[in-house]
Image (cartoon, rainbow, N blue to C red; front, side, top):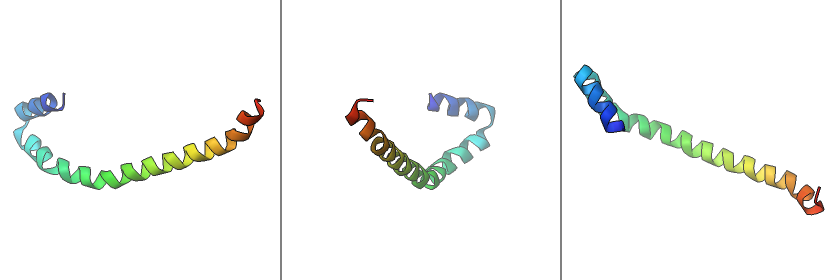
Length: 61
């Protein structure tokens, strides 16, 4: 799907397509730490939710 979109962009405007091809890895490297941070924060929230709900599950409420 991504290759098809890039090919359409290349047909419509080849300078923008080539710029996108060059900048995509750089943008990916910038966004990667944010994705990892989001994954870690999500894990912490799941752990907190599990700790809060655990007593109610043990009591069967």
